[in-house]
Length: 234
Ligand code: CDP
Ligand code: CDP
Image (cartoon, rainbow, N blue to C red; front, side, top):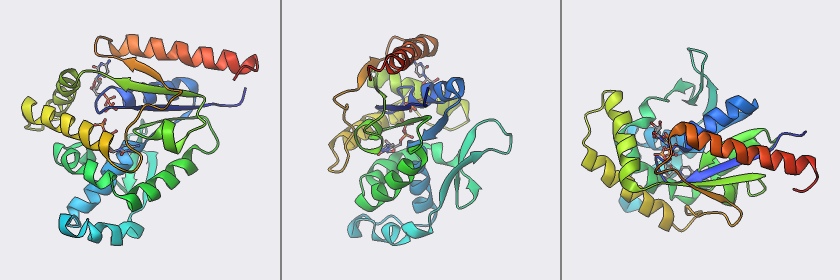
């Protein structure tokens, strides 16, 4: 059977990447973390002082051609990490500081244009699980399976807070919750490709689901889609 494409969209910290990574591993597909690409552009902008609200971030837009992004196996050989101009920045892009600036950067038309083109190129042959905000609506509108993940903001903030504390970041639960809420708002209300459920996406609310339950549920959906394709129903 030809490989399918799976699009996973949804709010911040709903478990999209954990799910997508495991699905890709089990199916032998590639995993593309589109959020990591927006985070890497934001990290580049912050590191080089390129954000300037007054000029609608012109310094960053003028520098987009100098940003090279790719996913490569990390030095430990386990997971693919994002490389920014040949440097592994997987850890640096996960800070709360990057989370604070990423939504305004991701709302910029030229940034989206560049990253969507790269993502489409990475997904063109199928056999891909991609997660983000506009994958089912814009990047891979023909994906055979589209999932839209949601969970309550408090639960998502708790999950992200635990993650940041575990890596040693000194953050408070209140500031993580505020960031989750702010990004929900900015990502859903921006003009270009806002976070929206695709018409043909299946909604998964995992507020009360463990990672294992969530995986089992979605894995079954994958099986159903694949069985439908075999029978010529898709
Ligand atoms: O992991 P988390 O859900 O916190 O966020 P992420 O997937 O790493 O994405 C970070 C930010 O990138 C989001 O809040 C969006 O502003 C932006 N993003 C986007 O606009 N479009 C995508 N396809 C993926 C991410
Ligand atoms: O990619 P996204 O921001 O949507 O979420 P993630 O990075 O996959 O998950 C955020 C955190 O929530 C991780 O530490 C997951 O282990 C945790 N999580 C959970 O505990 N239970 C779930 N049902 C989903 C995610």
